[in-house]
Structures are given as C-alpha cells and as structure tokens.
Length: 363
Ligand SMILES: Cc1ncc(COP(=O)(O)O)c(C=O)c1O
Image (cartoon, rainbow, N blue to C red; front, side, top):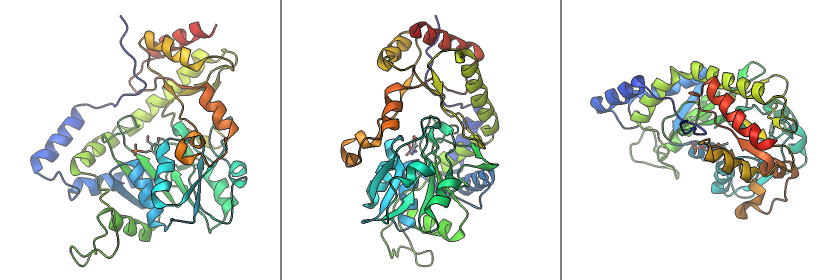
C-alpha cells in the first residue's frame, strides 16, 4: 500500500528537537530570548537586508507594516485578486480599502499593467504577492506608482526566491514572510518583516511590543500590539535556517520532475516565471485543461492517497471584499487551478506516481 502523500509537510529532525529542548532548559522561552535576535540576524543576512523583525505570524507582520507606514481610513491598498485572504484582512484591519488587481495569466501575479488599471489618487500602497514562490515584478510596479505609494512585498510564500539577483523581501519598502508549518522553513506559526530602513525597523519593534517607550518602562504613547515571536519558535527557526539551502534545492528538483512527467499533457499549464525571476517553487501548481472538473480530479487523487489543494477563492468573490468587481483571470485560475503535493521529502518516484495518477484522470 502506498503512503498518504500530503500537499506539504515540515522537515524537522534531531537538530530542531535539540534546539527547542535547549531553549526550554535555559528558561529563555519568551520573546526576550537571545534566539529571537539571532534568528532575525540570520534571516536578514539571508535576504540581503539590514533589518529583520520577527513577528507572531505573516498576517501580524502585514498588519504591523501597514500601521507603521501610516495606512488607514480613506486610503486604498492594491492587492492581487488571487491571494490568500490574509493579505486582504491585514489591509482591512487598518480601515483602508482593499482594491484588487487582476493577475497575469502566465505568472499568476499582479503586473504594472494590471495595477495601472485600478490605481487612483487615493492609492497609498500596493502589496504584490509572490504567489506560490514566484517573484512578482516589484521593480516595474515601483516604477509605475512612483515614490508616494509604498510597495510592500507579501513574501509569505517566497523564501529564497530571486528577482534579477535580489531575494524577495529585499525588493520593496518592506517584505513580509510567514513561517506557518507548510512554509519552506517553519516555526509552527510565525513571521518576519524585512526592510532596509533602520527607522522603519525601530518603529516596527516599538509597535509589536505594545508600543512601550524604550526609555520609560510601561509608558505607552500609542496603541501597540503583542505580535512577538517566542524564544522557542526562534530556536526552531534558527535550526530551520541551517536547512534552507537544501530545502530550496529539493523544491526546485520536485518542480523539474513535475514538468518532466507532465510536459506532454495537452492543455495543462504550469506557472511561468517572467524573465529574471527564479521561483522558490514553494508549491507546484497547475491549471487543468479547460473543461476538466477540478473537484472530480481532487476527489480521484484523494482516493489514491494524494492530497491536493484548490487555489484561493478570488478576494473579490468573498463577501467582505465584494465591492471589487470580478477579475476574470483570477476567476479562471480559481476554476482550473490545482496545487500538487510539494513537500520537500518527496522522491522522484513519488512525483512519478502522482503524475501517473493525474494523467489517468485526464485522458
Ligand atoms: C500569500 C500569503 N500572505 C499571507 C499569509 C499569512 O501568513 P500567516 O499564516 O503566517 O499569518 C499567507 C499564509 O499562508 C500567505 O500565503
């Protein structure tokens, strides 16, 4: 009998067990632990930025950046229509209006052209999402919107992805990563904000810790948040950082295998990288041939022990964001899109078996 193949699974070993155990033994489990600083420094160096601020989740990170940059009521923030709901929710928490832009049918990301269609005088920020690890054209979007509009990368899914020689998270005013258990590296829950401005880094650290005045303990001049990462999570994160290169190589290998085993399947499409972009291939996703019932394929694969994932419901189709008109490309992606098992432990044989099972259903 074949084993159950999940869509994603964390890679955790003795090194992680030791790191967390040592943290617990030391008693430094709170956010004051030196492991939090160490994790931040290692992550900043990895991304090629001067500042990395650890937070309790990617969602918290997105919210905190928007607050730190002064976004609020009356402002509009452009996000892709095809993204996880967290991108939109973080904007909504601030009181700003969520405006969705359609995505490109090949890269599945927003582009300067799709952003231009919804840009107004009230636009104060754009949040490109590097969907499934595929870098969006942050440079092009920055050029389009000019200096008055901030561009924040939602890099929750794109650890290690590169655009024209620079890592995602180092392309915009700030970048936000997630360390949820299905991400390339994980701390269970957790996140990291990256940026190059010391001032912004300081402001983020102030806000995430209940906005306590650094020179007057328990004096809080503003409303702050508790968005801190714990010492235990950071210890786990440091251990995961030691694996990041090999995890990334595994993802690249898996994507290549899928492309090899499915390349001649007519009508089936892979996510494409634009020139200069190197995806991290966090999740290998496909568009099924037009007219194929995605739910039927999901069910059939499930019966073979293969877990898959549908794409996100377009943001404009969710009740709280439905003032946005339907975006046709996002809608198409949702109808045809399927994420295949992409865990770093998959072998070539596993991928071959998944593709065999999929091809059988597509004849
Ligand atoms: C595109 C995107 N943005 C934001 C988030 C939110 O991250 P978290 O789950 O750590 O809050 C996720 C999480 O999966 C995501 O995929």
